[in-house]
Image (cartoon, rainbow, N blue to C red; front, side):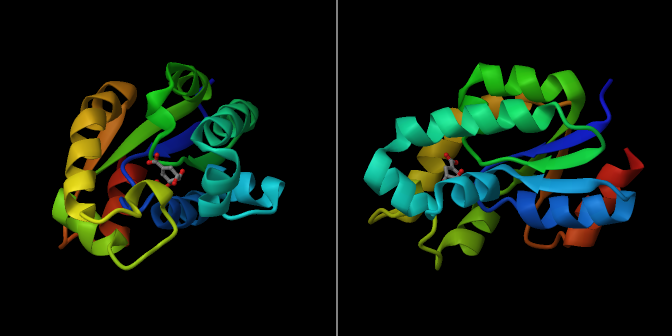
Amino acid sequence: MKDNIALIGFMGSGKSTVGRQLARALEMKFVDIDRIITEREGKSIPEIFAEKGETYFRRLENQIVEEESRDNNVVISTGGGVIIDNANIKNLRKTSFVVYLDCTLDCVYNRVKRRKNRPLLNVEDMYATIKDLHGKREKLYRISCDYSVRIDEDSTIYDTVDDIKRK
Ligand code: S3P
């Protein structure tokens, strides 16, 4: 039965913030896949990427998505790259209503530009990288979700939470 909600979307789209609020509003548990990864490894995401590589990170991500999908009554916030692997989407969709936080590129950029916690965006031209990666992933987000919510500079967390709650 689909009694979980999984949030997918690009880096900076607000999956963790929205997820936490949504879980509170619906009296559900909240889990954040990236957070479980960092807790299990005892390292930050940039450290995991630098010391063990992206492939290692993706393997862990896979394993944790699989474990957490089996839980009940939980809002699952995923990392932006979760859609790269079809096995993740299969696992999430088995038990979760999957919501895509469809955040505009400008909005993403403004939220992530001062942060250094995303190894894939620690590059010279961050905007171009966001645009490129987003272009490669957009279709995957769309085909992987049951519902999508458009988010721009004017959207508040409460608008987004309300929209998902109503659905
Ligand atoms: C990634 C997104 C990050 C984190 C890692 C890789 C991606 O999560 O999982 O840096 O490939 O898009 P957020 O979407 O929470 O930033």
